Image 1 (tube, rainbow, N blue to C red):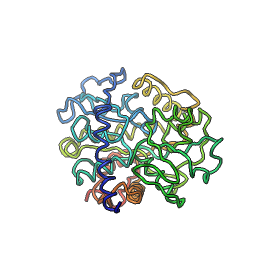
Image 2 (cartoon, one colour):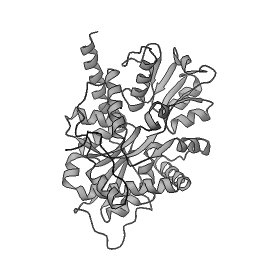
Image 3 (cartoon, rainbow, N blue to C red):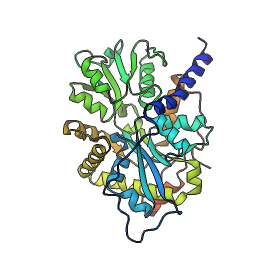
Image 4 (cartoon, one colour):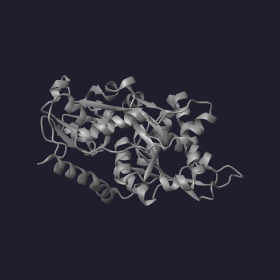
Length: 367
């Protein structure tokens, strides 16, 4: 098949992912009310807003949002404007929710943020802050895979076609000199797209030989007898790469900057508290995961997973550009124009007021 036709087919499949995700889980699950969301006496609504709708995943890589909610930090900064929440399983469904106005602000990975921005010709969203780095590993069955070269010829799971980990794994495969068709996942390695919720069972049953996945899925596989053979952070300069961003609807940012600033204040406060109180923050994140899903993570999964994630307000913008290049290299994305994808004005305002250093958009900011 000609390269351009394959590329068009890749983009068509990626474009259909949000619709598939929506058919499976709608615009996300409404999270239950919790007792921490108390409104201070005399608090006023921001910009007259009744609520700000916040989205995130039930992943430890979204712990800034988990902790911010569990500790009541978002509600504190929003005053009498209610902080409402929705949880998601996949980036495409969160982008659809953002585009439809079902959420206003969300925590999300780099690949869906890039896709959402480029598909809308730069009109749908802005990245307004960072949240986390790291927390992605290649975990394998040690009986079948003893070294990285043994990955060739094996079945390795990623969460979803074109998602952040899928792109990273396809790029790593190419760097080994191996060939894989990005769409079918067939080639020198068989890439199996598998929801993080079912990957541990597939691994245990022997349906896959390993997985390139985020936390806590990676640590769940280790608990099932897997071995971490590669931590993705070792592939990046300074062992840092963006795994979670904060995005906002552009219309909401324009109409309600005070509300956006309030959410960013809460996010910065959450990261400060996480880094100052790692054990308490880990427990708070797990408590919110339990409230959202009905099940907390066991210690043998929670503890190693938490250690592999760094929480930072810096969006690590230079690594976003590199991740986009990886998607282009894999044939999953046409070369994008990411100029203007970031608007870090409000984040830097919050950081300055807090006496912290500002962060940079690596040439991709709003001019």
